[in-house]
Length: 442
Image (cartoon, rainbow, N blue to C red; front, side, top):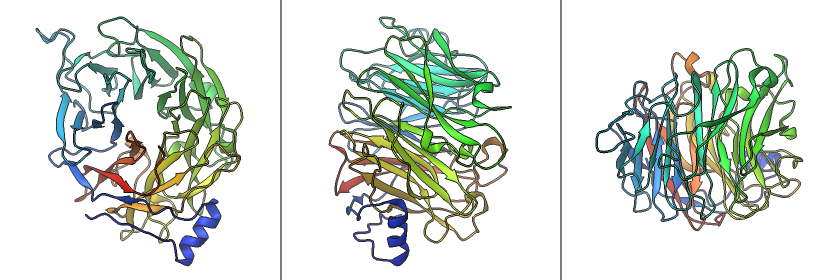
């Protein structure tokens, strides 16, 4: 594949989409030619982070019994090396308590000191691991947080001088979302999470069954945020997005509604995603998918008071699996899979010839009452054709992309995107592209 650059937005369809989404003129971001991170493993659902030294890490599950994989790049994403965790142990000299299971879902985070924290689902629990040397070696064990769980996420306190303050969230099937944290000054901080609190019960969210949480982030105050879907009935308008916050050192979460998402259609079709910027403020940014009968809309809203009140929601584009990253105050990038303008409907019903791309949009006024975004641009083209199943383990086919892709940024605010491609039916590779020019969020 080659990179695709759109310098202007001249077509009538593009102009109409910009008006509908409140978008600003295109900002001429360009992206590198995509790099295949690993073509030897059938991985998807890539997570991506950059550590304080500029190293980039991508993780991805490969299926049970695993374990999931982590790759590292030290040259800005041009080349990649597998860096574990693989089989690790609490005692590296004897490899006791080996982590040999996982591969269901995975996530990796970093702190200001460059320590890595990893979580890897195997349904009975999640294996957890920590690395203090950029992934060259790991400490870990197979029972990380609460038992009988689904879709764990991890975040680390980003403030200098706070190593080992790490959080993980997961759904304990049929009971609640649980937020767990490590114990500071413990050699296994980030590999064990002994302090767990129920964030919100399944009943409170309105579910009979399961719906895993969205991702987890920690801001420069040390406050940790998690987003999740809500569901109060089967009729249109009975869905939404909730958000919880846990202050640094706190033991109880505060739960509120992302009010612009109230009345959405089925928000369980995609994970809602939350981001915070790199300033000690109370800015919170959320994206979600609103799958209306005629188009699947990528929606965005922000809060400047930690989730108490919200901006107007804006439609950034159409597609599936949005992810958001924030850097400087009020500056965000969003990436997602899109077939617009040729197809904007339900990805589960996309015709066989539908071509999906990695779409990208940016806002530099994301804390305004009605944020504006650049018109959707294409960061990588033709990553998959045909339908994309969003039914999780209920999918019988067309699930090669997993349930999400992700975007992060480097030290100066250039976008870093990890995504899945489908070279042949039933197979997937994880690829990477980065922003090479244009406005950044730094």
